[in-house]
Length: 376
Picture (spheres, rainbow, N blue to C red):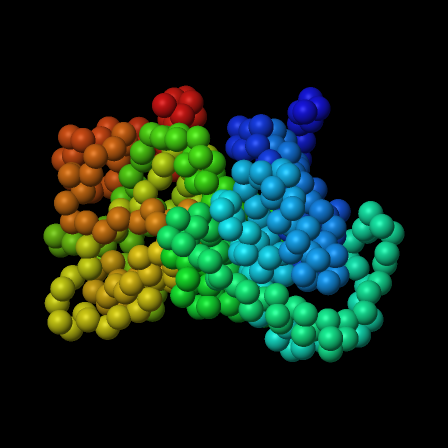
């Protein structure tokens, strides 16, 4: 592997996927020379990124990918759009399907992806255009209908699906989630940009890399009240979280530097967000799905104490809070390394950081504290 080249303008993670192979499967009309491939090689400089140009005919493309899987034995496969459709079918590997076009023939017809098409990125064979007729659309339909075949329980838990909440091209979340528990909505459109890659894809890659390495990071619990502005949580009753409620969740902005702190902490620690358990009061029984969807995508009360906290976490933390949100009124029983909270839970099972105190008045103070610890 060539020496690492540091890029001072782009956040890099040389420790993630170090010495491993990532295979990227591009979308319709693209190539292995796309900006996404450049982004991956820049952000993960210690990894090897394999990104083939796919044949236009889908059966040939899938055959090529399966052969590459045998030859390269990738540690992770990432596919976007059409590539997500192919990636779902590559059994036996850790995979991330981003806005997968699982019904690509319908997508092609609905969005005018027929007739003469121009490749969006250069291809190694130099071909610049291709033609999509009814016969080719039928080929795509036949291959896409092989989705979910020979799927077993082990494979179900090796695949993540990421779905942009502003995607107007593909919406296969429900279809994917019928077969895979790890389906997550993120802030973004169909085409992945730097922001969605860094804040939605990289956290999932970190989870996968940690699991592959058996890496156990120190645990930080964040009491949700510490992420809210001080005036939001100042309440004299026994319940310190009168806000945000369901309809107000997006109007309550996070405490200053909270999001910056979360981004800093998840790079070094296993971070969980602790919310009060929903009240069982019968007047609060309206049900609403978890905003991310996905595993545990059961339902939680939308009213009452903490009823607007899931939408708030989805809005301002998003993917890092998926599967990392705990509901309890007994947080002193949480076993971990650190607990950041405004209210005093009298925890003896974790080092408590009293947010709002002289030592930790702001989230910048929290960042400074953990920066000195160096991930310990």
